[in-house]
Image 1 (tube, rainbow, N blue to C red):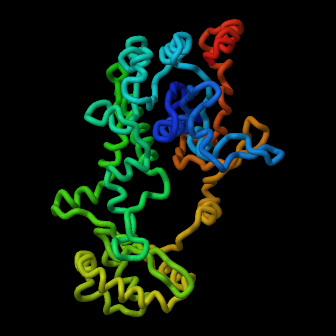
Image 2: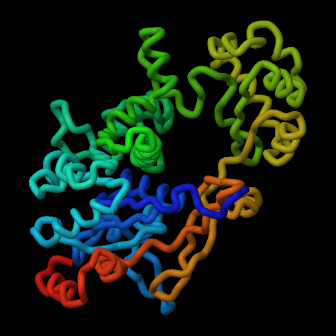
Image 3: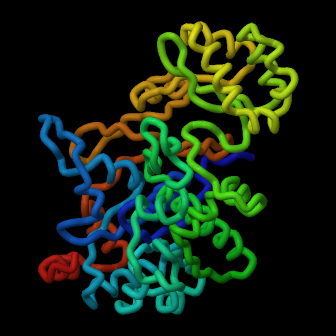
Length: 408
């Protein structure tokens, strides 16, 4: 019998994180149905609230102070403001941790230990607690105490060395990825890790302490490029849009615009050659992927000449009919307006606490028997402070006292 309960219904997450990597994990858990309580600094909140423009506008067209960056990674959470550097604030966090299943934090190594809010301290209160620390370099090693951001880790972790056009070509040089991909991948690894620990808790009855490093994540994400080096001893190079192991995969210019060609096997290459009217090209030296990779410069020259005689729409239609993967390079507006994206309801407008609607990108996770609800708008700073404190047993007088002291 199916149930409408979401996959993580009943799970409580205490989110002590800010910026992007760990908050991204918190948003994933909220999408899955967990109750996520986000702890923020009174008066300022998560740094990303101010990382604009652009900012969400109110009904009168004025900036709300809610930056798009913040809105992208905090949907479905509750916000409570707490000064964790005060004894009263630390007591609130301990009470929250006593009821939580998962804690996410991304403070510099050693910071929360000074406040008695580290993994050992909180797991002593709640042995079933899963405590996950997300940092730039991990909890040990020579860089453990250093701060890090996505851009820095893209560079240090080798990603920029294999991203961008080759030296000597127009635009040549290392490039970062156009989205904070290390933060996002770190958030994904964080979510996977805490869910694995949650499953293990069913067996042991105990939580765990998890150490996630952005640099570790980036090193792991080098994937085929790392293995290319480990197997061959040759340093991977920037190769523009061309794939290092599978060809032809690149950008080619038609008479009226560029197309992406993604040939994945010999059969698809033969079909491409048929569409281009050059079936003999799929024979001899270019018959196999290994031959195409070795002779990519000569092959690319032949393909570039052939593509230049086509109009983009005609060629894409012909390749689609032949089963050859190819497509246009869409802008962000074009992506969000694509009929497939619209049909999948990947963008929804939801009510915002300020009385307007905010457009949010939907979660990509689809469950047949436990459908996820549309994302709820990210909270205003401290929007749920009183509700959360009351649930912990604080009286109205207690809350007024904490507010008067600047604790919340």
